[in-house]
Image (cartoon, rainbow, N blue to C red; front, side, top):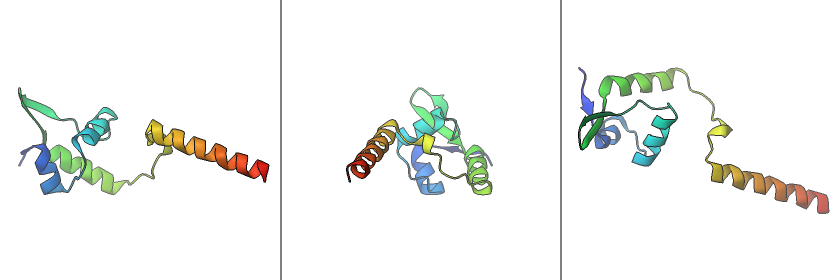
Length: 91
């Protein structure tokens, strides 16, 4: 049966323990089912779309992609590598 899930139900029913902001980022990256607007102040997801997304994730787990790191973390990693190179060069 197709149900409408609100954000709290994603956490309680399906164990999706992410913030709204993170879910919105995943939606923008096409890595999470889009939410649907049901009224002016109501958005949600269809349960069958969430279940299909979960089944797809379980069926084909992908290794983490370093390109998915936030820019700040990538910049930090780049600075760290540069410092390590400098330390090796001066040693």
